[in-house]
Length: 588
Image (cartoon, rainbow, N blue to C red; front, side, top):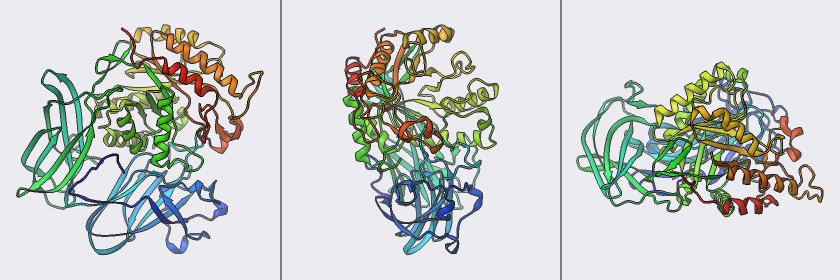
């Protein structure tokens, strides 16, 4: 599941990468009927008219013939052999998921793009049934999922893993690079574990980071039911059992040119014998904001980015790793150095590749284009908070992630919206003080939240939706934002083109016009001294919801530099020429 080995002691088994039994739980004629999580689990005799099929996991419902427009609950079943305590980890189930082992519910979760897990204890030796219920309905219970300018797929869309765990097991390691000194990199390490038993337990701990060893003895871990409070316990990470600052010598810094990676390993020990372990991969680097600069290891970044959705005609949002790698190779070929994960946390396999390739990542929570009315859904704030917590806890160690984002083009022009932006940005800063935060806005002159983020980010489409040039719009933005003294990023810029539509007259939706517009946009933003860089909207054409289809030819958002099958448009060479001619860093 990851780009490196995470365990040497704990037994793990990937349950994805195989065919599962798949059943639609609604009558196919009623596939559009919205259902919420309160409807409960469907029993075998209530499974509707659908017969079981074989589906590959990870997979999307919409990629199964006959289910292209299905919305509702689905059942995904497989068998596994194990005994004792097992932990089932789901990297992504859309939109709402439930985990059952032998008919017993282990966990439920809302959020298509963040991982969750459930533990079964004291299983008897033998074969057991795993069932995952997935619901991709649009319903009030799912405040972040509704018809949008991208497609919300359903299913078990990311990997599933089985772990055999002891009653006390490691759940999370966070390593924070603090500063580089003459003796090496100063870091802080935090170790979390979970206790499945009803009694407190003692454990010893030992670990190593790039040759530097550390240890602790006689650590008391409270029983599973103990309430330690928010400061010492997270439902996503477990109990904080160890925190220490260390100096790591003889390591290289992670950078775009040299993405050096190292292992952080921890073991739980009893009577001198290790009984559980966890390995994370880290990079030593700092990210901070200074005036109108974004600094990576003290050097002012120039962002040459692409907005990228997880979307492909053949796979839906469940892209295999080879397709992820192919996307990154195209981005790198065009001279890109960053990806914005619009508009949700991405598959961790993709983030691992960005770590390895030295590609910066702007990762954001799941929210796009929400009105104040939508944001007033009673579940909105709580569901956003859960996703932010899960995103940061799971992806904290990726050196490629340099900024966290929230709430793309939402109601940042209202007082209620401001309260939401303030709460979510404050939560990010509480969870992670080592990275800046931002949000992408399109509400020029009416946005009342620009004082809240560390970086001001703007979606703009000069020569396409707007009559202004990029230079004119940037001048207006900088005049308006000057009192804030913050970096400025163009978080979206671009134009649409239908692949294969060629026009000597450079008509709208032609490849020629898109290439013309991108040439002007990118040159002007690159020459604008106060701008730290741009993200092209977007890397590839993506499917949109049916409700958006009349605005989007072929039911696609066609602003990709490549089409949905990754075939380059004329703009590809234009972007490559401009991006490849720019360095990764700004002067000054």
